[in-house]
Length: 200
Image 1 (cartoon, rainbow, N blue to C red):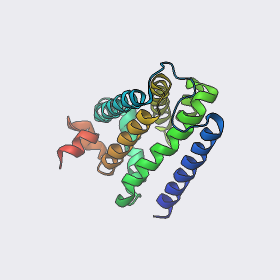
Image 2 (cartoon, one colour):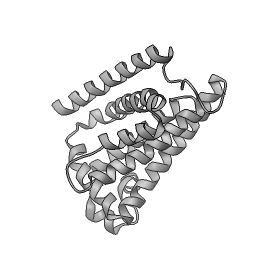
Image 3 (cartoon, rainbow, N blue to C red):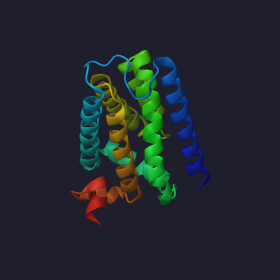
Image 4 (cartoon, rainbow, N blue to C red):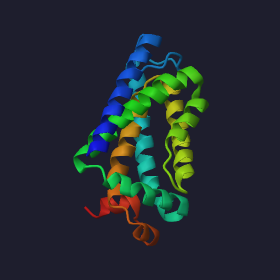
């Protein structure tokens, strides 16, 4: 309980600080200062939100396939599962939302326009590490996802899509990791996320 409360507090602080910094830098929050495509705000949010939801759902559906097909991803899920199980179930949704907001405000909202898409994505990957052999699997996966979300933000001009994608991935995969069993993931066609959904 203590660690999850601390995580919620840290994410809330990161979200607030990053939002305030973006406001100070560019005079607005959640809008790219130099988007690739000039769109009206309503279309910018619509395209970004739709593509973000699509990316989030695609990652959620791809997760069990990767766990079933590749040992590094199965090892990663096995190492993350005990950490996730230590979080109270009542904190799953708040943590998914606050972590999505905090990380997107910082890495996409502030760092991507400031230091570039690639550098911000590499940093995003590097902070996603845990002790153990699967640390670089998570770091590389996070960096690739960060690159996609940064491109979505730069292209659409809206941070809505990256936040939506991140929140979907966090919420569904946090729940799936609570029920993850390495042996079941290795032998059944519906491991990971889809396996947890099929058990409902």
